[in-house]
Amino acid sequence: MDAADMDKDLARVLISEDELQAKIKELAARIDEDYAGQDLLIVGVLKGAVMVMADLARALHLPVQMDWMAVSSYGAGTKSSGVVRVLKDLDTDIAGRHVLVVEDIIDSGLTLSWLVHNLKSRNPASVEICAALRKPDAVKVPIDVKYIGFDIPNEFVIGYGLDYSERYRNLPFIGTLAPHVYGEA
Ligand code: 5GP
Ligand code: MG
Ligand code: MG
Image (tube, rainbow, N blue to C red; front, top):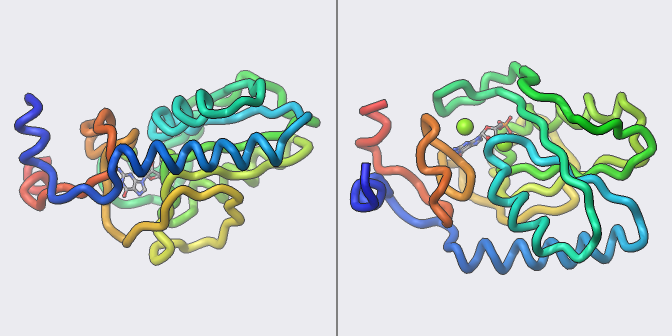
């Protein structure tokens, strides 16, 4: 598949690269201020959070540590199953640490609410959430999100780390897919 194919698969761009980058800088400035003088561990949720994690980490002035967790809740399709599996746990002991979970998107909220519960059982000093996107109309469990990039409509989106069958993660913007793509998967 070449660049033209990827263009053809897009229905529309929802959030441009410039808008994303500006928002990440804004969030980083708030995080810098909120955690000034504190020891912060940012935890990226693989694989979707790779882009926001990389951009956020570089926009921060705080000397953070970075760790990763991989959880699975979607399989290869477009619907959240609500069943969370840990595919990779943290390498870090978070007891007594300030933890900021960095996520690509909050859809039903099932994954994050499970994850926050799991992390809190390890006795960290604090656990907060930073998510690039949220779909307010899809949320099934209320979650307290301290840092949110954009609220978006209840549509399946791709790009900036988000995939459809492991494709489109490398798009630098957030978009929706043309209907013909779903038919082919
Ligand atoms: P939740 O548990 O909040 O429903 O979502 C879990 C995960 O499903 C998200 O972290 C994300 O990886 C994936 N997901 C949710 N909504 C979308 C979407 O619109 N597009 C893509 N590509 N992934 C999504
Ligand atoms: Mg995710
Ligand atoms: Mg996915």
